[in-house]
Structures are given as structure tokens and as C-alpha cells.
Image (cartoon, rainbow, N blue to C red):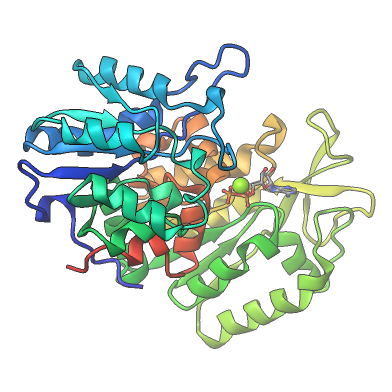
Length: 397
Ligand code: ADP
Ligand code: MG
């Protein structure tokens, strides 16, 4: 996968109509329909403001929720247009259709430095089908395409991939940053390169495991997936999360680490609970002494120190997947310590994965992490080293 893509700064945008794919998939209140967090809208401002300041006519578009190809009033992007008006302190035009007559008329009426937002792309059944007709219609609205919706680059949709067949395609600042930092870490990491994997299931992370084991100097495994590895080592894991059908694979991964001289770390002690509940009874035990009826819900204190030490002196750290059931405060220590160790490390630090990102943010470490990837599924596929259609379609540098 080539991460070296032309950015919006490489494009001549003055006087041009720029079709800008944003991620305005914002959370909405179930009761009032109001936007409950405008974080994604705020994140899109640098690219929008750059384009406006440089004299482009900006036609922004996005999906919101899952309307399944039909108009749903409560998933309209109109409230986003309103919020953009407030944030940019300027009028923002809104088209009530996706790529129909109203959009054509409003797009053609734009002056340099003006902004138009189209209605929810997924109201059109062609969007998720990557329909050629819709891609052509969207392309016809503009002269240049800019992709700034990292969260959807793993999907080949009309607005994320299809459109690039008809317009010169560039990365916006958000996508450019993901490519520079995550792509840089995967292509040419500052070493030692430490990969930390956790979360619930081995099966969710097989792709990431196999990609990173070829690149990392150290692989650290925590979270629920660690127990399948411990099982492969013949340990009794009690009622901890186990994927029976992945035990062999776990053994193979450990063998591969050995063959490639990758340092491989598993928990040596764990925090266990007598049931899966926030108020369960808690103990910390060595991994050789997990009682039959108990389950591992976090890494233990010795493990926290060992993992913290392994991270010190790293050049690059990529983390995907919490170290424990951090949603239960009694089992959040491992995840919190990992976030803190990363923040204190001085390394290039990257967090990919929805839950790990949320944990680091909740726990107050976000501003000391080099990069928290904004795309849940997209960042996972990125870490798997897969070709992402919304990136592959952009112009190479
Ligand atoms: P991410 O979204 O960062 O990729 P995952 O979705 O793979 O992470 O995993 C997150 C989930 O893993 C969390 O909800 C957490 O409760 C769960 N988890 C972590 N450790 C354990 C464990 N020991 N047992 C059960 N679930 C766990
Ligand atoms: Mg998750």
C-alpha cells in the first residue's frame, strides 16, 4: 500500500469547485435530534478553511447514520450546515438533494470562498453500492475531489472511491495526517518499534497481528485475547475469554515471533473477577494460579511494570485494544497505565481502534499521544496493511 499521496496543498484550488468528502457522521440525541458532539465537524475545519481562504468554491458532502438508501428526516445533514455556519461565522448553503438539480444549481452559483453542504449521501441508494451514475453526478458538481473522511476510506463507496475515476483526487489534512503518521510508522518506523495489542478477541485482530509481527521489534499482548495465548502455553485460564479455535494460531504466532527474534510479552499476572460484573470480587494472581471459576479481566501489577519497562526507550509505539475491561473501574488500571506509559515514553505514539482511543481520551492522556486515529474500522484495516480503496484512489505523489 502506497501511503505517499498528493495533498490538498498540491492542488491548484483557486476559483475551482472542490468536492470535499467530510466525515460529518456526528452523534445525535435520540430525543431532540440535536448534535451531541461536534468534534468531527470541528476536526474538518482546517481543510475547509484552507480551501475557502485559497479561493475555492467548496461543495462538502458526508454520510450520517444508516438511512439505507432513502430519505430519513432525522438523519438530514441540515443541522450540520447550521453548526458549520456558527463555527465558520459565515453563511453555508444547504442542498436538499444529494447530486440532483438543486445541488447542481447551488454548486454553479457558488462564488470563490463560499461553501455548500449536500444532503446525506446515503439517502441515495447508489452511494454504498459505489454506483457509477452517482459517482459521475457527484464528480460533475466539482472540478477537484478532496477526501478528508478517514473513517470511511476502507469502504469503496461512490463518494469515497468511485468519484476519483472522474476527478483529480487529493487528501485533505485529516487524511494526510493519518497517512503521514500511521503510514510512516508501518513503512519506516523509528525503532525499536513496539506493538501493543489487546481488546476482546484474537479473531478481530488476526490481520493486525500478522502484519505487525513482520514489522515490530516487540509485541505486547494484553486484554481478553491474551488468554487464548496463555491457553496455548498450557495454562489454566479458568473462565477467562477463550477462543478455542484460535489456540493453534496463537501458538503459531508465538513461534513466528521466536523465529523472527521479535520480543513477545504476555501477562505474568492478571486481575481476576468471580463473575463478569463491575462489582464482582477482585484478586490479583499469577497466570499459573487462575482458579477454575474466575476470569481474567485486566493485566496484573507485575505485568503493568513489565509492559511499562518494555515501552521505555521505544522509538515508535502502536497500540490497538484495551488491556482489560476498562469499562469496569476496578479493571481499568492496565489500560490506564498503558496510556500513561505511552504518554510518558517520548516515542512516536499511535492509538488505533475505537475503544482504545475512547479509553485514552476518557483517561485524559489524549493530548500527550502523537496520533489517535479517528477511523475505528479504517484504522484497524490500515494496521492490517490492507489496501484501502479510499486511499488507493488518490493521486500518488
Ligand atoms: P478496539 O476498539 O480498541 O479495537 P476491541 O474492540 O478489540 O478494541 O476491544 C475492546 C473491548 O475488549 C472492551 O470492550 C473491553 O471490555 C474488552 N476486553 C478487554 N479485556 C478483556 C478481558 N480480559 N475480558 C473480556 N473483555 C475484555
Ligand atoms: Mg472496538
